[in-house]
Image 1 (tube, rainbow, N blue to C red):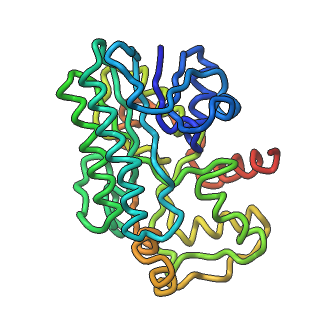
Image 2 (cartoon, helix red, strand yellow):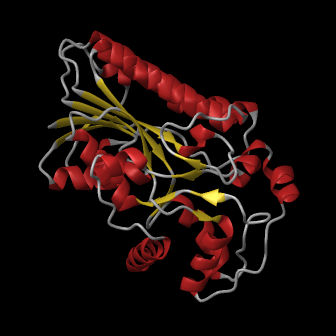
Length: 304
């Protein structure tokens, strides 16, 4: 299968490239990095530096759309919001516009999203059929991102929307931000710690994408998160215990909101999400408990 990947040099994308190359797929990566850097990160892949370089004659069996500037980063000023929007929604619109022009259309578009699609829903158990709570920029961003990808359906393309939880793995993701403080014994829960965290190990995440690539009967939204979500307090306590450090310094809600604005509200939101449709389709998670996933991620991190 010849697969076009946007975001191939990112945290998830690079691991996906490794998996698909090992399975003898042919990959083309969209990246603005220099060719040598892309191949250092992704392996032996084809490279395009602009979506404008895609012509109607380009042909791919599948497209995996993972592009997007990091959500957790600088505060969400209006300028930053536009960057986040353009790197997800606008880019996806351009991708679908190329699919519309393509003489031979891909069989499937697998497009990124996030569990933030559901909004802040407290203790409520959520699956793919659960309606979102329309609140905040993060929720609107996910909804628009999905809506842009769904336009490919009218072109006869199978569309899968991957609603990703917090991704655990070495060298990036949520752990890259948490580990420095936790290793110094300065970590702790966020506010009350009662908010739910839906998480997934990066290896299971890329296996989900591979599974959807090869499952022609599957389309629509899929929750890419492990079947056992945990509260923020449980997550931080487990991480601290595995690091043999205390977790005694909670971050007050008012301080997060004051320092980070809307992004602080996102960090305090609660999504208790289950991967109902993946499990019904027969996908088996290899790392389904938080402790196992964290141990695997930390072991790989220490080996780097």
